[in-house]
Image 1 (tube, rainbow, N blue to C red):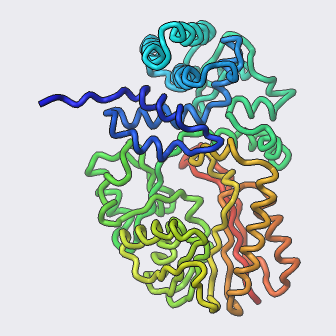
Image 2 (image 1 turned 90 degrees about the vertical axis):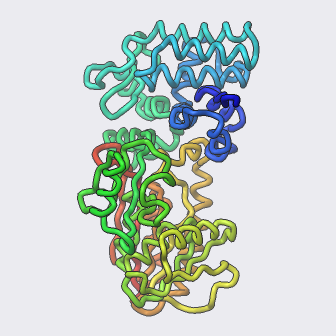
Amino acid sequence: MTTRKFKSARAIAVEVLNRCDPKKRNAGPVLDRLLGETDQRQKATDLVFGTIRNRGAIDTMIAEFSGRPVERVQAKLLSIIRIGIYELIYCPATQEYAIVNEAVECAKSNVGAKQAGFVNAVLRQVIRHINRRQKPLSQADAGRVLIQTPSSGCEFDTDFLPDPQTCPAEYLSVVFSLPQWLVSDWLNEFSEESAWQICLASNRKPGITVRPNRLRITTTGLTDKLRQAGIELDISSDDSAIKIRSPRVISELPGFAEGEFIVQDMTASQPVRLLNPQPGWAILDLCAAPGVKTTQLAEATNDSAKIVATDINPRRLRKVEENITRLGVESVDIVHYEKLPDSTFDAVLLDVPCSNTGVLAKRIEARYRISPEDIQALAKIQSDLLNASAERIKPHGKICYSTCSIQRTENNELIRSFLKRNPTFELECEEFILPSAQGFAHDGGYTAILFRK
């Protein structure tokens, strides 16, 4: 019997990055198809997403220390070099010689020995300029350090970064691999310290947060089950969420198959909590896919409301069905958008499509695609959906409007504009949350509860 030969995590990562330009294609589906070819699944995943997440900073390094802009580096070589630099800077526990040796071997097998020499030269040059691969930020020179965590970074021996004092937007854009126009927008809207924290949170390695399914298990019951399986975890201060610290495949966690939890960030759970839906309500979830908030509506009403879930994309409704089936929810009726009944509801949950600027840590490719023009176009769609929702609300009913954006154009400005046009509605409450990498780290987002008089 022959022993199966697995590919290395780096080989898988190179293959994924060669196939996926983040400006056009998400890496996740390609990575999922290839993970079975390696026995280093967690490492391969980190190399792919870590390299994409930090690509702006990495490309600055390539141009600085190779003397050649990335546009002039052969595409297959570029993926290998990017992964190698990612490991040198952001994976300080990995030995330098192992990073360089495997990058060179990978280059030899992909493009030949001559080009492998260039890979070796670039990575060696980067190493020569590293003072310390992991250093406390409190002791580091900001102009020479690339940030790894809220408290540490990789320090170099030369000032190659934009000056954080005179060019804060350019500096934050390079260090956190984010669009400069977006960083400028945050600096104009928030304090410089807040903008720094937003950038840090937008570039963190996101953890996995789950919401216990209260229809089947308590938070205590689920945490006990996870801990018995050796899972390290943290519990939110209100006991509503559990952060998984042990790297595991979600579907292999205890309780998943039994429908005892669903993945949901703390911020994403806030809209339904603010709405506070009641048993017996008729509720429309207008942009329901993938159904996480749909199931939360059912849990919050003890599976005793009348919930209609729909989405403009009929294929995505299958995911809603999967989630309500796994969690054992019975109060949800899935209806195709064009077949939506002409009736009114006690509440409409409107989780609109948005720019994702509050969840860039998880939707890493979004940073390479979003533009100011896109945000204006999204605001038009959001406004149209809000108007459509208003037509379906009973007197004294509520609209729960939510986004995973932190742009005012999609949030409070849009809501103020709606209220001016619709005097029969008033703002009951709103909540704006910035993403955070500190403590029980979470995404950013906005919620407004609108009440029909």
